[in-house]
Length: 398
Image 1: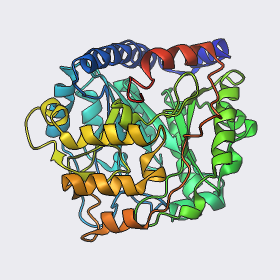
Image 2 (image 1 turned 90 degrees about the vertical axis):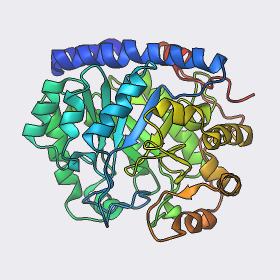
Image 3 (image 1 turned 45 degrees about the vertical axis):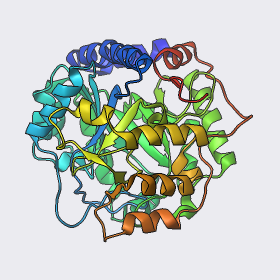
Image 4 (image 1 turned 120 degrees about the horizontal axis):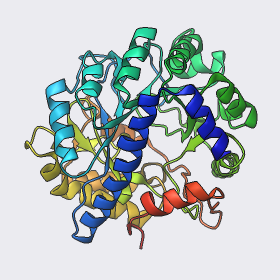
């Protein structure tokens, strides 16, 4: 399957995009993890992968969205994005996840890509605003892979997204990415209403559409409309994991996950310190769904200094890893409340005053990826090798 996927990418991806993927993401990404591991030996935590929500605005109103997408617009401008990226590059980073809201609404999005040609960007988007012209501009940049979110059938997509004709508009953007010969991915937040997408038929359809990789996120009920009834059961989560591992050896499409090591043991990227999040207001959070903060990107010119000296982030990593190998937000909202109160962390939801804590208080424990005794090790040698060397626990769980 690996040879078939490689052949398909060679035939369908622009050569400049392939080179940038191999060098900026592949080689430099591996190097950034090695530098991260070296820092850890000295007790210094600065994540090799940063996820940045560059704008809060969005034209959709999705169930479980944790971002305040209406009201006053907040965004990180080009100058500050360049400053953040330049500082991170000094410490070996080259990969950045770009989120929103809807990041394609940011007026300087393409400038961010163009002015940081030695980096690689994964663009989390609903795809509706990706025109042929925008896709062509991203192809010229060569250093960006759009990850287009698809949430199910026409009916399910409209319900999940809070708008009409969502799927058709998203598919148009997806087609524009494929036609522009971009490395194109599809993400799905798997929940009760779209669990049927966990199927070989869905993967076959993605392959036929020209998609190169996919990412099955597990739905996390957060935000002003959390819809906890959509959350997966522990049994469904285990079946999803088995499906992903099995399909990696059988289908010529990349399947991403960020929540398991090579042995199938659960992990949390924020607890291991491999990634943290910056929101549209420039506030630094352990991860996108933990909307409480103590520091911002504006506290000091050096993002490295702010993050490595944060007692709040350090305590989150330690407390989360000691409590579970899964998602502390889902499993232990009580522990997160204690952490927030201990550090006097500010609400970074930017909804009504006190809304962050009110939403946290309303959370009931739910299963996450941690399912002791039911570990599903990686079958494919490449995924097993990559995770063992560049994406594992990093000593967080002892």
